[in-house]
Image 1 (tube, rainbow, N blue to C red):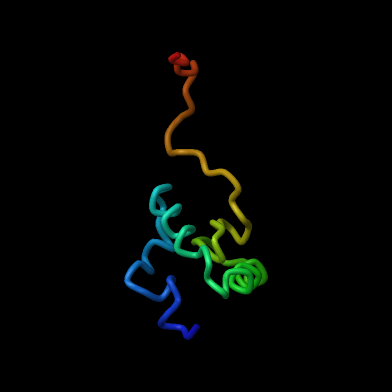
Image 2 (tube, rainbow, N blue to C red; image 1 turned 180 degrees about the vertical axis):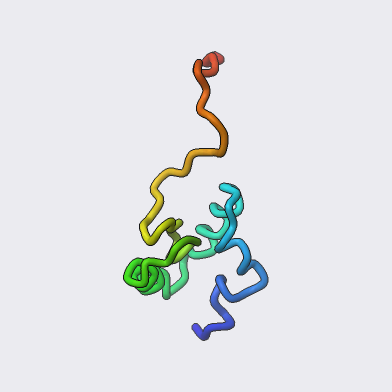
Amino acid sequence: MSGPDLPCRGPHADLFFADEPPRVDAAKRLCTGCPLQAPCLDGALRRREPWGVWGGQQLKAGEVVTVRRPRGRPRKHPLPVSS
């Protein structure tokens, strides 16, 4: 696969540096099946990329972000569970 054919080099390249969780998830989905996914992530971790989606993972401060909280304060009281 050459550079221009990679999902991160196409018309959706801006998704790989988005802040909004739905756009980050879209970028991660674009990485699925890319033959360079593992080397991309390895390189980003080695370079300690400051942020973005690399190899299907979101990085912040050079490390993989496992779960990202939405913006704002957490609720004081959980929402009631509907049955």
